[in-house]
Length: 184
Ligand code: ZN
Image (tube, rainbow, N blue to C red):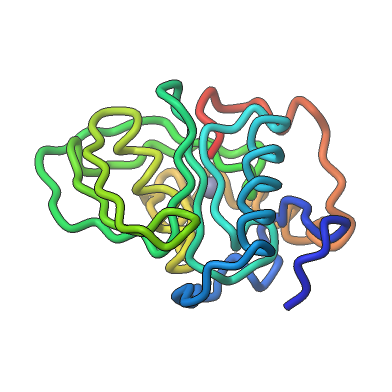
């Protein structure tokens, strides 16, 4: 897969890469560090607080997160402990215009690697825990709509059809981007 900057754009529901399981990263190259930096830039430019590599068309286990307490770039992230539960209204940069209440663990321990291949451990709770779980879902090909209740599914069905139809053109309005406060 090519990682040229010109090709790094947020992919929208309907694009196959969002549903693929991402591969473990085994080499820590300058190219991957550049991708992580570009991902962070795209996340900030989109007013997002998290972004996973499949969202820019790269099926590798890499995420960036900034929920207000600084930027994390994590490779091969894995949740090794979790406790409690919380529900937040989540939006997704790849599923614009849709907001779903998702139940997740309240406190988690994430293990992974930094961009140079060194082990990192991150304890996260509340919003930060929510963001990490959302991004790690992306690496498994899982999206917020998979957490939708039966009623949610009815409510969002026409919007989803419309999004899938427009996935090729990738055209989005500003208002669609900002339906939900949390964009991940
Ligand atoms: Zn997302």
